[in-house]
Image (spheres, one colour):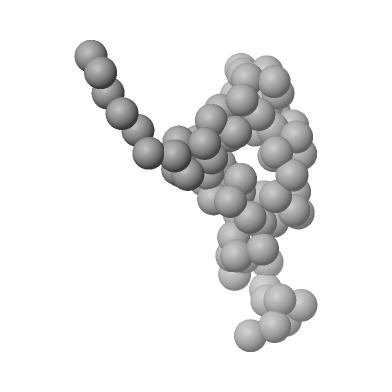
Length: 79
């Protein structure tokens, strides 16, 4: 089904990018349609999330960027 033919309740995160998917993992009750409109931009996603939480936009951007680094890098624990 083309993106323009979707009803508002059938939003997917396919076009929102990795930051949108990471945001949904961290904050699962976010509106997928609103995340889609953020177009995968971490600052726009952070502005949206900041209205729903007590976190600042800088902290939210750092959390999203950290989740991207963790997903792409191997982790080693020397504890």
